[in-house]
Length: 536
Image (cartoon, rainbow, N blue to C red; front, side, top):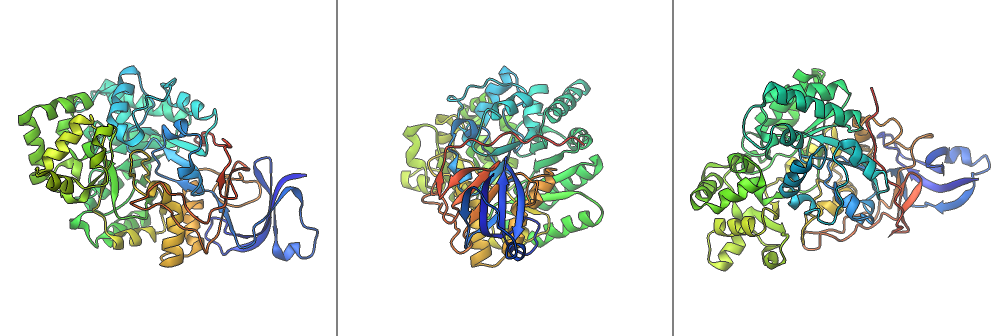
């Protein structure tokens, strides 16, 4: 007898096709049978060890988070309800060019300091890996949901070149090619870049092109956080498209937004750029989160020259009054490249988390608000947080435009990504709410997408980008990574005031045929594993 039959589900299969009613049978971690209503009416219905009545529920493939920052959370928090409760069954990590493999002892310490705001200090983690393959093996010991990994180009540069703002030597470039190739051979699905983060941003286009040629040779894709989401955003998108086409590499644009006042209403220009490239044969996809504010670290806003040499060098520059004043001028007057070429508006920069409890009073307020309450200049507050929390603060940056968000999510190459940072007292609600927010707010309430379209954006389309032949679609023989949700009630519970509230209307989630969410409760099952690149 099979493990499970899900009876009378409204199946939305992840292809964009109309829904249909069926019994779906799961056994051994796979979908073994789909019996549609018309057939079931004239034959004996399937039976199983467990029979689940799905009347009134949609059965779809599990959601794929194409941009996640759960690199340590998957190891730290076996519950991981932040994602499991949303119906996420696969996350893509190693994002924005900075993560924890490949490393040596030096770069591991540097990267841990640089992205404390994204993932925590890691003091509670046993870093018993150094290579990409060893990290994936660590995930294979059991995690809440599946995870795929991108080789982080900034980490590769730190390992081969260091944190200096200079061109790589031929020998260093060869070393970076080798590191990227090894990561892909060990199972990474592509390469990420963070081109407003040090040290990845120091790479010239010629260097990136050479690394993308390696990625292309393994059938992977390049996922850049490009050089500007503010002033010069369109030029930055065009740069990524041209570079990927030169390298012959598939391109996936990370958190593809058009932010800051200079880009209000300009999403159609971005989409026209992409449509032209697609018509010319380019292989492009993108992901977005369904919210207007962004989220990053406070240190990320600083000019790139300030971070040269690594996190300790940056802290040294902040400790020098003259250099700190130069940093302030770049931020507030010139427009730092870390702030996308736009002079910072401190009333848009909300502190969402700190690592030192003594600084908790700043959380939930903008830098401007805290400055006025204290009778100080905004830079004085920001500088204090950076120094005393040793680059640890995370921020929400309220610089997005709703019309741009809606226009981009309608595009035919769009996928969903939370960009969810799980650290801090008040993280961005997208970390806990992205996928139900798409289904509840943008589908049911606003009608921006049909339910079938939206599910395809969150399942089948990202699975195709990841080259996963047996995931992302409800089909016989495919992996039983599945979610059942109520289309009438599904909604994000997370808000800016209560960002860790779990969603409503998602009672069942299966990973590899096992319930990780059962009747709305986390089961403790750790069915997730690494999902490794399919060889070309």
